[in-house]
Length: 135
Image 1 (tube, rainbow, N blue to C red):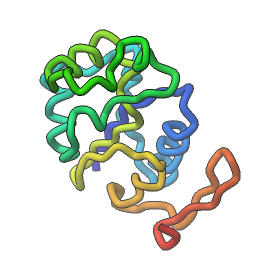
Image 2: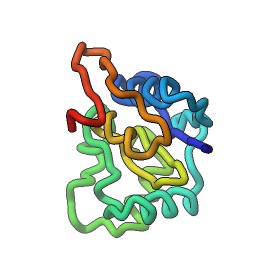
Image 3: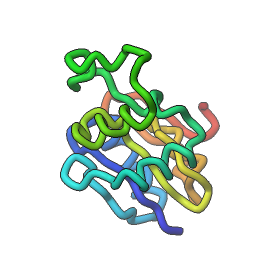
């Protein structure tokens, strides 16, 4: 199965998700989206595949969200995408793409439903034990 993760190695949730993918036996295509942001078209495809509003993909913490006044409802979807392309740190992560679907994996255990052979349990960086039966 082909697995792609839009990953930020500085993010614990993203690191946990990547580790769960690898422990399932898959070696994913890892796209460090801060270094290689998705194109406008790809970002739209991901949003549509996840079935979420554009605004739901915006990350607030540790980003210029407040400074750019992105909470203001005046911004159109196209304008919000413009901001994400100009400031990729605004894109919520991690996003995982497999044949089973596309999902923003927050919390990281949401990736389990996207994998052919998910691990039975996993210990996150903070010590929390998660697994398919625990969700």
